[in-house]
Length: 284
Image 1 (tube, one colour):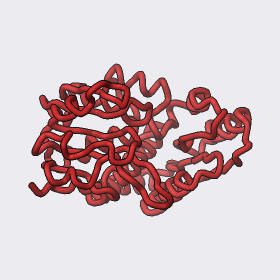
Image 2 (spheres, helix red, strand yellow):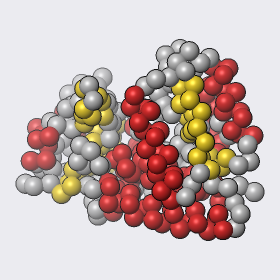
Image 3 (tube, helix red, strand yellow):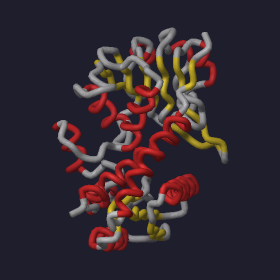
């Protein structure tokens, strides 16, 4: 079996065109659509990722402001930078790049962001809206995965989706989103992780499998039901090489699969742009 590639670059490109039209209308009406980003420390992948987000913004006309704090930045200094952006009417949305350096209380930092400017959809207020099914910014990677599957007409509604990983940025919110009665979701969802006995047998039951554990090569072809859709959302680094949670030979049995590069990543960035515009549209 030759798996169909879930091409995130192509889908994200279409989304960026749609978002760009909305940006143009906002700017024409005199509204600000600026994104503020805060990076703490000297983490290479995070630096590259923030740079890509700024490039995406520039491509569709969103202005951006950036604060880069050193690895010795204190909790108080990080929250002060957030507070300045919260109070700046020219900044419509805010991104605090995760992960934060060891010793920083991530929860306290996320709580400091104005929920109305939360571009990642990770503020507890916005996660609460997700649980309730209320309108609000959706977490970028989970929402991007749903859009990617829908764009390739992968059956999800009424199917069994297995999510590997229970992290705040992907696993937990994705499981909630996929179980909701909304287009492209409404699935039976099982969440597993590396602490679950015989994880492989549970994963093999999935019509759709999303790997978000951050363990290179965790998912092998023996774990996948023939014809299933497989999304590699978790990544790790080996030197400068980006590795997927999904082993390369999974494509031999899967019906659909994300490429190692160009699958989920572009979708995450496209959803961030959509959330940034949504925040600007909701500003008074």
